[in-house]
Length: 372
Image (cartoon, rainbow, N blue to C red):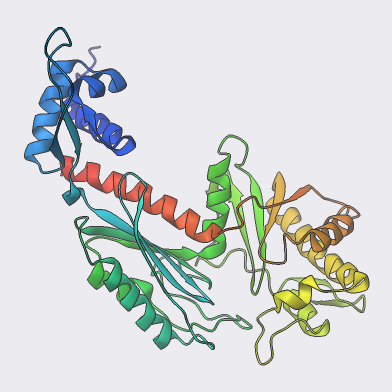
């Protein structure tokens, strides 16, 4: 039996991918640098650089290495071309819309923010999103090849539209980020729930140790992401992890919906189901104990169904030490419990996850341009 040899075009594509990925990691490299870093021969790298330059993906920077008088040949520095393109990382949250433009090196080359007045109706959010995307597209950097969106609402996994669920605090209604952003982006628009992106960001901090865990978000809204075998499990339509309606123990000791616990404790903003974070953080010991018992009931349900190795708790009040202590104390008394610890990312965790996904997809899109 003979083994088929890879075609010349396949070998060239693989070589070009190696060269492009090295130039994504570094701002400029000579052909000799590229050969050393990739393990390819200098002639092979030279041919790849020539092809990629002709394709408009790589440029000669005009910079040269020292040479002559016993210092070897002068080398030219090469870099990714600006025309390789950029991507958008977007956050749609109760306090505003943030749009970042990232390049293939992972640098944020532009950022704009638009506040949202409450209640955050879909029309206002769509207008803020379109304005921010248009501003992000101004200036250089080549085409915006794709966008990755984090939304503080349930997201339909196929259409990317936001889903209105009972008692959802932000009421974005039928906002369609894909339709809003498509005129500003040359490629796909990927939308997911903010808790899922935050969980992916936590996973990426420790990919060797975080492959099976639950991420419970406790802030103005409530949510949960289940990561199993390294992947976020989104459910049939994309609303897996919506924990607001799970039954748990209320302040009076009777079964109640998790979202109603905050009404019973007087912890909601007036006229909405959004949780008043500052009131939660100021709870006295008895209130913290009641809330800890309610959260622990939710954790018990998550552990029973998803069997995570550990539970991470994030969100503006979920990581507050007195609240976290009350939760872990109550949860330790449950028949089945796992390690509970605070999430490590506290500064824009969802946007961090969306940004990482945008970078990964952008790099793949640039490489695909060479092979297309």
